[in-house]
Image (cartoon, rainbow over all chains, first blue to last red; front, side, top):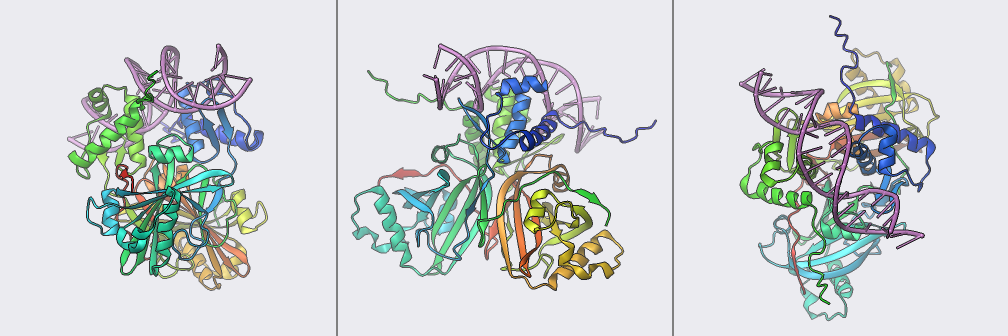
Length: 255
Length: 255
DNA sequence: TAGTGGTCTAGACCACGAG
DNA sequence: TCGTGGTCTAGACCACTAG
C-alpha cells in the first residue's frame, strides 16, 4: 500500500547532531568559547559519547571546532587565508616568502620523490626543513628536496648551524634560472614529525602542496609542504581572500 | 636513575595498524583487489572492529582504500591529477573546460556567497550546477553563482531545458571582460546533494575550490567546486602531474 | 538471502593539561 | 589531583549490494 516515499531514509544521528550543533555554534556561541565536555553533551542529546564524537569530528574537520586533550573543545575562528601562489614564480627563500628555515640534512628521499627528481634510488639529497607561521601559530611544515647537482658550489661552504646551512642551500638555488614550476594539492594525514611541528596529533588532516621547480631542463627541487587543513584556506592569486563559508543549502526555486 | 626515555609513549593501536596495513598494501595487494572483510581483519589483528575501522578510515582518507557498503573494501588506484588552474584565466564554460552543465535555477545564495558577490541579502541569483567527470567517474560538483546584473541580456532567451539555460548563462558571461580571478582551496565535507552526485556518503571529505571572477570592477561570478578528496589530486600549472606519494619518512643522517 | 560496510551503544582505561 | 579529550572493547542492529 501507500509506500509514499516519504522520508523512508532515517538520517544518521551523528549527521543530524552535527547540523544541530552547527546551528548552535552560529547563534549561541562566539569564537574561543568553550563547549560543555563530551560526556555532558552526549547526555544532553541522549546519545552515546561515540556518536557525539562523530559529530564533533566532522565539525573539527570543517574548521568549526578545535579540540585539545586535557583542555576542552572550543569554537574555532574562521579559517585564515594562507597565500600559496601569490609570487607568480620564484625559488623558495627568495624575497621573504613567509617561511623560516629549521634545519638541513642529507637523506635518501622516498621513492616517489626520487622519481620526480629523476635521481637514482638510494642517492641522498639535501633535505631542507622549513616552517611557516601565520597569525602567531604554526600552519605548515615543509620538506624541500634539493639534489646535490642543483647546488654544485655548496660543498665549499662552512656554516655554523643547521638553519644557516639550510639558508645556504636556498641561496645557491637562487643562482639557477627558474624555467617553470608546477603545483598540486591533495588531502593527506600528518606524519608524526609534521604533527609535532603543527601542534596536532598524528593523523590530523593536512593539505599537501607539492611544488616542482624546473631549471636547466631538470627538476631542480621539489617541495612538499603540509598545511593544517583545519585552520587554513589556501589562496592562489592576488588577495588574501574574502571569507567564504558553507552555509545551509540555498532555497532553490524554478527560474 | 635510568628513566631511560625509551618508548614511554605507546603508539595507538590504530596507528600501528594503519602502518602495517599500508605496508601490506604496497607489497601484497594490487589495485582493485578486495581486502578481507572488517570482522575477519579485526580478528586477524586481535583488535575490536571499531579500532580496525579507525585505521581503514585513515587509509581511505589518504586515497589508499575505497570502501563501499554491501560490497567490500578494495585497493584504490593512485589519485588522478585533475587540472584546476591550467587555463591561465578564463570564464567557466569557455573552450571546453571539462565541465558539463546539469541545470540552472534562481536561488537565494548562502550569506557568505552574497557577501562575496556584493549582492543584497535575500536577492536571488542564477545558480548553475555543473559536474565534472574524469577517467569515467564523477570527480567534482560545482555551484556557479551569477548575479542577474552580470548577464543582463539573459531574460530575452527562451530555452528548452535546464541544461540549455545553464549554457545560456555561461555564454552570456563570455561577453564580459574578465579582469582577474582568485582561487582558494580548503577542506570540507560533502553536503547531501554533492555526496549523491559524487557517489559518496554525506560527510565524505572534499576539497572545496572557490573561484571569484572579477569584471567591470565587481565580482561577476563565484564558483564553488567540491572535488572528491579521496580520488583527486588538484594540479595547478602546466602538466597533468607526475605521481607523488608519501612514503615512509626518509632516513635522515647528519650532513 | 547472505554478506558487506555504516551506525550506535555503554561501558572502560589512558594521556595530557591545568590548578 | 582532577577533568578533559583520545583510545579501545564487545557487542547490536541497520542499509545496501549481489547472487
